[in-house]
Length: 346
Ligand code: KG4
Ligand code: ZN
Image 1 (cartoon, protein in one colour):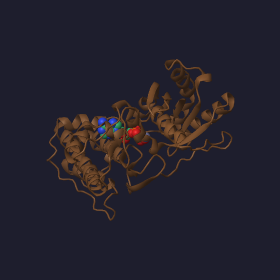
Image 2 (cartoon, protein in one colour):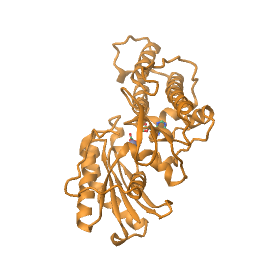
Image 3 (cartoon, protein in one colour):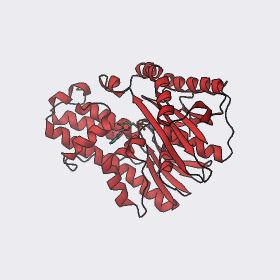
Image 4 (cartoon, protein in one colour):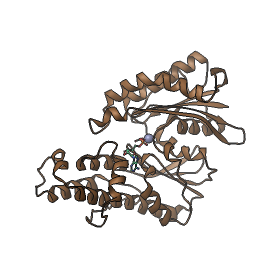
């Protein structure tokens, strides 16, 4: 069977064609991603209205390219899967309405997919994974620790109580004057920095599997204000131009070390409690190489990471999640009523 996967929950307009064989083997035939990230860079973060408008412009060409790259006609598509939430309302709406229209027009069964659930499924494209499966899903919008018993049943062990870890990378980057998206730029700046220069605090939480990154972000802001000899009332957007390169690198390195240690401590604790057969770390922040280094050292099992280009948002993970739901007997949703759900929970 061939599945067209569509993803528009944030600033990437994406579509992919996936071939799922009876044996459970997945073969990615195409994966097209058009990002509006450059349009948002000037504002230091995603502007929802700009993202939605850009999805409108790109969605049809992106889907056409996914089909043609896969050498696939509409007759050969068996299912359509679309990210229905969580995400930005206007952005989700473009993907969901496009998928609904195409499902009606071409008479294809339609599946609405939870975007967060789909992130770890990027790993199934390359690896045979076993259950129970422990997934750490870390991106700009989510930080979730999830234990999957099988493809249909899972338990959310913990999640962020405030900012997602990627969001913290993006906000710290903004304080340091590094361009959006912050994650890759913090990673680069940190290579030159001294991670022991600042001792940033670690959140202590009731549920040991939850995360919190807003205190860390505030600690970075205070350290930066102190470095330039100002107090807590000094506006964050004026700090960057007064920091020198060394201060910028050291703050980036110290922040990154604190954020990654928080993730690694939680994953290590969950691993030793639940002894999963597979561990997947997915989502945009999983592209961070030092994170991979720290996690690989902390667990006695090998951790699976999706291919770097499948860590950030894409249509392939949406199609892969749908493939296993379909194989497990989940029924399609009506193309007349499927709704975009910005606050969809796992
Ligand atoms: O999964 P994703 O594309 O979108 C969401 O679903 O949020 O993740 C984007 C997030 C951004 O916050 C970005 O700064 C972060 O992933 N990110 C990284 C890296 N690459 C992307 N964070 C740390 N290190 C990276 N190399
Ligand atoms: Zn995502």
